[in-house]
Length: 307
Image (cartoon, rainbow, N blue to C red; front, top):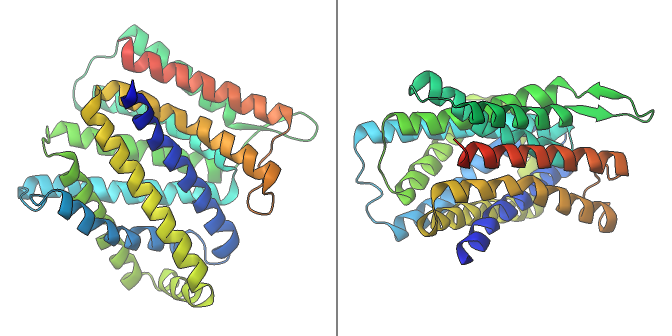
């Protein structure tokens, strides 16, 4: 079962990047906003390109059609990041990440609408369980123990992020793209860089905030962003390697552990390092998150393995 622990390392690394994103937004980019983080993340992808090129010298041997599809996937990836950062700016990390469990739901719906795939009764039940889990987390418990819907700036952007993620996977499957993982990662990261360059050139406010933030805290910001991109790329590599060791469905299932890791890390940081991250860890909030994570995890399992 060594593949399981290898695959599990991926969502753990992604969970670490979620909190680094939160620190960057709250501590260094509170005034400059998500545009600055988006620029750092997209432009920082340039450091991954030589790595992928070194692993697979054939990454450039891709047809124009496949390049176009991978480019679209890359742009959708930027859309995912943008929506995610909007939600993360105003919400707890452990809440935001649960919404990503909607990706397989959107993926199944798009597969039905675009690819003509059949949805079984069990899949519909599984999707309903996942939606129930995310609905639970969509409400917050106030001081008087009343439930109220979370801010639109949390729910709507994360619905968008999950949809863009699922759409990218559907487009990939639609054209039956058979390129290997390293080629896919290379071109998606290249598109991140190109989109970042376009944002830097054409959106003046983002460019000015990016330069200002870099000048005022260049050492800390650069260090955190390099660390963040390194951890994220390592997560991608680990997951890619896990695909070579085990069936895709099993590896995809391990991704449902990311909210668990995010919740665990959030509790540790809140208890021991409250100056860095503070999450709501009262019993009522913890139980709400555990129930939501459990339901979405069960739904994901059923959706992947009981068709």
